[in-house]
Image 1 (cartoon, rainbow, N blue to C red):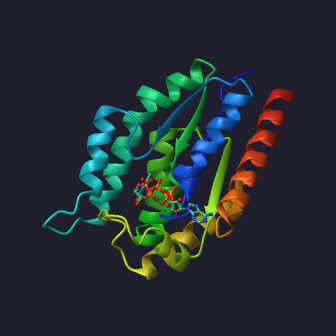
Image 2: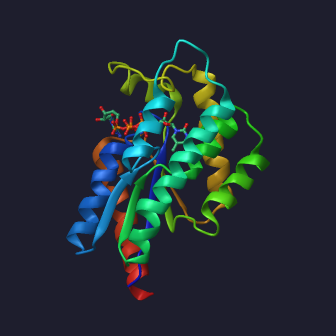
Length: 209
Ligand code: T5A
């Protein structure tokens, strides 16, 4: 069986970290060899770019700077981690990928979607995730979940930014069949059960070829 590329997406507070664990447990139980990684990040240099992107600078950060930082990190991540793993037949589980760029920089920052699409095809070529589990949650629910934690530069954005981010994800989901939308407003155990189910179904399909 060749490698497969699984991504998880969602706004802050959707429960991504928690549910990446569930995907990884399901793959382990199925005996699948995988790499767990994240974006922005996944290599030492890409993690440094992530730190630069999320840092609360004393100057404002231009949306284009932000966009190019995530794509710079992605280029490094693709060449050092994602493509080599897939080429070796390993699965890749990635916490966020380019759908996040469309949602946050495209819809959140209102950057030109055609320019994002051009960068996407330049940096990734034909490569797309095989399945994307999108954890959908209303911004007010998400806000309450992360209320107690120290916030990075993105997390301090206003509610209307996250309303646009959510719309960005929903529009991407309607355009790409690889998306599975999961209602992350439900209790955690229910969300995890659905994530487990979707992952198991995907493994079965992959095994059938
Ligand atoms: N970004 C990223 C861009 O702008 N462009 C890009 O191209 C890319 C790739 C990355 C930031 O970078 C931006 C987006 C982000 O702002 P990140 O670490 O991926 O940062 O983002 P976070 O969303 O902050 O990551 P987390 O992993 O912390 O995600 P979550 O979704 O907040 O997850 P989690 O699991 O920590 O859950 C939060 C809390 O909610 C609870 C959990 O127990 C936890 O306390 N919870 C639930 N409670 C009740 N019911 C449920 N169903 C729950 N699910 C979780």
